[in-house]
Length: 86
Image (tube, rainbow, N blue to C red; front, side, top):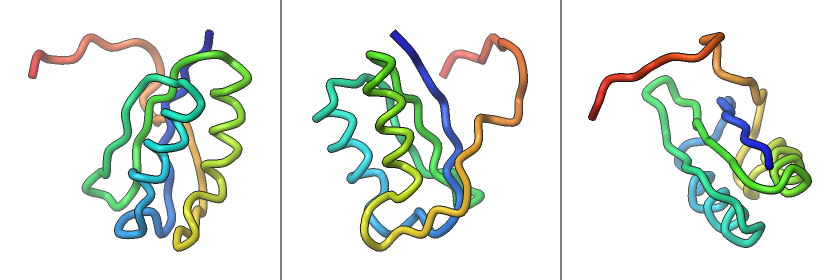
């Protein structure tokens, strides 16, 4: 099992990136989530079998047809944090 949290930058909002990633993740049997961020990036958490997670990360570098991915980075905050209750 593996989990990856990604920050995906470029032209990734308004091009169906979240729907594309949701469909790919479901087809691969992965768990997690995806969301737009106010800075124009897309953030995602992918969890499941290591090979499936790594393959989807590779696919994320291309994204859907209208997307232009400039970078995929891990989040900037190092370490483990306890977040507030929503």
